[in-house]
Image (cartoon, rainbow, N blue to C red; front, top):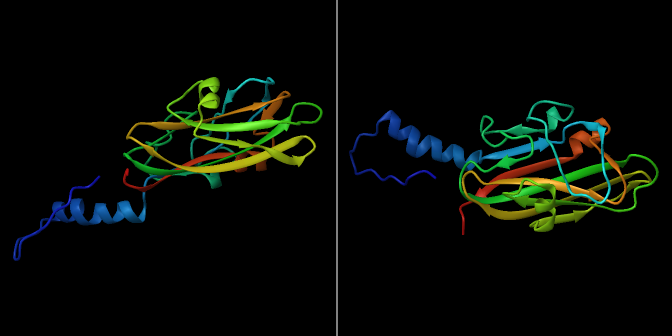
Length: 191
C-alpha cells in the first residue's frame, strides 16, 4: 500500500510527492483493484460427468461477455485464462456465477467451487472457500452464483471449477457467457 507522509508547516511539496502521497492514494480508494472475467465459449467442447473441470475465462474486454468484463489494473489481474490474480495484499470480495447446459437430456445436479491458489479441477473443488449449487433454469440448464470475502497476498489468485452428474457444455449461448463470471475486488487492508 501507499506510505503515510506528513509535511511540516511551510515545507515545499514536490509534484512527485503530491502524486505518490495524495493522488495515487486517493485513486486507490476511489478505484480499488478489481477484475471481472466472463467465461470463454467452450460450447463445442463437451465436459465429462462426475469430474471437476476448471473454468476458462476470456480476457477482459474480449469474447461475447466483453461488455460485462474489465480489469482496472491494465491486465495484471487477468494474466492467465484460468485465474484472477490479486495485485496487492488485502481483503477481497469474490463473486462467481456459472451457467451450464446439458450436452443431451436433462441435467439434474451441478455444483461450482472457487478456491485460492489451486489450478487443477480436483484441488479447486475439494477444498474450496466458496461452493454453490446450480439450480434449475430450464430442464437442460443449471445456473448459480455465490460470494465470499477472503484475504489474499499480492500474487495469489482465485480460480473456479464445476462438477455435474451428466456431460455438459460451458459458455453455450451468449447469455451463458456473460452471466458466467469470476470477479474479485479489493475492499480493504488485511485484518
